[in-house]
Image 1 (cartoon, helix red, strand yellow):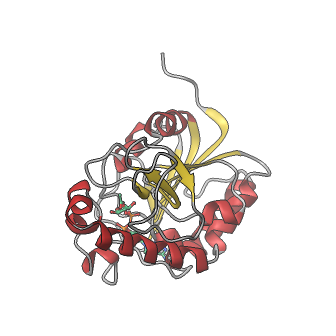
Image 2 (cartoon, helix red, strand yellow):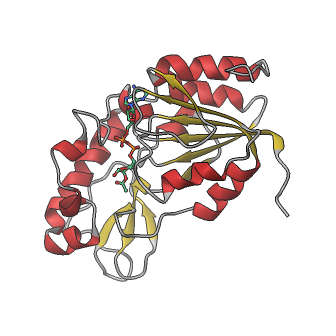
Length: 237
Ligand code: OAD
C-alpha cells in the first residue's frame, strides 16, 4: 500500500541552474560545460581509463570554482522553509552550495566535488577544495578519483530520494534540464495531489502535473518559498 502524503514535507529537486547565479557553469545551456568538453572524455569510466589526467584537471577546476562560489538567494531562501516544514533537498549538483547556505537534509545523486573515492576499495574521503593528482592515494595505496557519478555508473541515494518524492506534499524543481536519467525519472513518482512546480529559464518537456514558472532561480525561488511559508498555493487549483 502507498505511504500517505506527509503534509509537512517539501522536496526540492535541484540542478546546475540553481548555482548558475553563483557563477558556476551549467552543462547544457549555450555557455554550458558540455559545449567545451566531451562527456565521453571527462564523465565516463572509459574516459578515466583513457586519460585520467584530463579527468582530474576537469574536476580540479570544477572544485576550485565551486569553493570560490557563494550560495545565492535561491539556495538561501530554501533554508527559511525549514523553520516550518520538513525539507529534503535532492540535488544533481556536485557543489556544496546547499549545505553552505545552511540546508540540513541534502541528498546528492551525482556525487560531490569535495570528496575523493578509492579506485580499489570505494572508500570515500573528504578532500575539501584540494586537488586530486595522479599521486593521490587511499589508505591502501590505491589511486583516488573524484567521487562523481559518471555516465554508466550507479546513481546515489535513489531509493531514499524516491521515498521522499512519493510522500511529499509539495515539490519544487529548480534549474535542471531534466535530461539525465534515472535522476529526472524520479519526478514521476510524485503524488497527483502534491503541488509540483518547476523554476527554470527553459525546459524541453515537463513531467505530468508540474507547472512551470519561467525565470531565474534567484527571483522565482524566494517567491515560491514566501507563498509556501504562508501555506498558499503558487497556482490556483
Ligand atoms: P543542465 O545544464 O542540463 O540544465 C540546466 C538548467 O538550468 C536549464 O534548464 C536552464 O534553463 C536552467 N537555468 C540556467 N540558469 C538558470 C537560472 N539562473 N535560474 C533558473 N534556471 C536556470 O543541468 P542539469 O539538469 O543539472 O551529471 O544536468 C543534469 C546532469 O547532467 C548533471 O548533474 C551532470 C550533467 O551531465 C553528471 O555529470 C553525472
